[in-house]
Every structure is written in C-alpha cells, then in structure tokens.
Length: 339
Image (cartoon, rainbow, N blue to C red; front, side, top):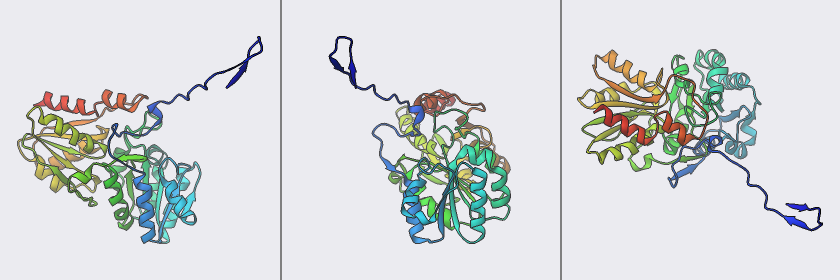
C-alpha cells in the first residue's frame, strides 16, 4: 500500500493481515494429526464411478459439505437447488422414487429443523433411498446456535425407517458411503468435512452399517462412543493408562438401528460405563444406551460425556470443547472423579 504525505514523498506500508478466528473453521483435528482431505466428496465420486444411479444435490453449500468434488467429477449428475432445503429433499425423494440414488447435502441444522416434514413424509414414510448428508453436526463450528446442530440425532431418532450414522473419522466416512448407497430406506450421515482426522486405520477396523466395534479392551472402564468422540475416547484411554486406569473403547457409528447386542455385552460387567457423544445429553447416544440397558434388564450406572441441554456459546472450537466437556482433559477428569 502506498500513501502520499503532506511533505510529498510516498511511504510504503505493509497491508494489514486479514483477521481470522477458529470460530470460522469447522475443524477439530489436533495440530500435526494425520488427516484426509474431503473424504466424503472423494468417496462419493468413487461410489458414483461404480454406480451410475448415484447423483448429488446441495442447497447452496457444495463447497462447505465437500459436495463440490462430486460436482466437478460429475457435473451432469449434480443439482444445485439453492437455499431451499425443503425443495432439496423433496426433489431428492422424487429422484429416489424413479430409482435414482440421491445424496443431498446441507448443514445438519437446516436438515433437522427446516426440512423435517419433507424428509419424514416424502422420504421416510415411503422408505426411499434418500441419503441426507448433514454438515456441522454437534459442536463442530463456533458459529453458535444458528449453526450448531446439537440436537439433530434427538430430532431424527424418532423418524421411522431412518438410519443414522455418526462417523468417527475419514475411514468411517469412506467405507460408509457405498454402504449407504446400497442400503434400503433413507439415511442421515453426520458429515465431517475438510481435513478429517484419520484414526481408525490403526485399530484393524472395518465399518459395517448397523454394527458397533470394540476397538480396544480394558478392565476398569468401558467407553461407548460415536462420532468424533471416539477419537477423543481413544486419546483419553491412553491418558488414563498413566493413572493405572485400563479403558476399553466401543465405537458405535450407527446410532439407529443400534447394535444393542454388542454394546450390552460390553457394559454388562462391573466396569464403569461412560458414553461419549458430540450431541446434547438429551436424545442421543447416552439415552440410546440407557434405553437398551433398561429394556434388557441390565442395571448399570452410565456416566454421560455429552453437551448440556442448552444453547451453546460461539467461539473457538478448542475453547468450546473444553468448556462443554468434550476435550480429552475434561474426559479424563470426569472418569477419575467417578472412580
């Protein structure tokens, strides 16, 4: 930048840097952590190469749900519906009715709050293969309540026929996409976008729709987790080992239908049971596990690590995760306090 002074000579000044805040970046990866760029977008392209019936739609959020990668690869099979979520899912249902396999992306808050009736009656009631892809699930943005879908699973769990998947990392997403395309009925994927951590490749893990997996054993505590909180559960388990606490981790990427058999087999012991989820404590994984235990007559105390039943603040993600109990340090403290 050049400025002219009253004395005549020009003075060059450096341009001011553009201020940024992590509240604007939907990333929960730790510094230096192994990540995979846009796993959903690339997985959808791969699936579409093998299945010509797959199409992609979005409501003006292609770039922010990694759908733009599909749009570039298959422009003739991509549909930009504009900022009209009800139209997005109504159109997707119509396509599914003709035998097409649509993946329709928007933010989770818009899918759950704005378009519920269209999804329920247009897709779920006729049991059509409409795949809902919801960005910014739970506390994965610092924008505040307008964009934080902290209650999306609670809203969607009551919808008949709907499958709900809460992936941990890039491995889950890459393996889930083709299975969702091949499944009957509507699905809801809690999308992790951008540079997504790659974690489960170290645990001899394979995603299976409707199945929970034991990632590690432990004699003192059993973590039952979903979504990004499985990553945190594994990290916390390693931290707790330094306190001589042996922790098992059970990953439950499919919330509905829920693999009660595997989970109940792990929690029906004398170990402390802790559920971990990036969702409000109301209506999500904690209550799913508790209900399964009650139906089976398993009398267990279950400690929830979850978001509180309130509208959350805006801010930087690390600060918010620490504040609301999702950080590794807060998980470790909660377990040590309960033992």
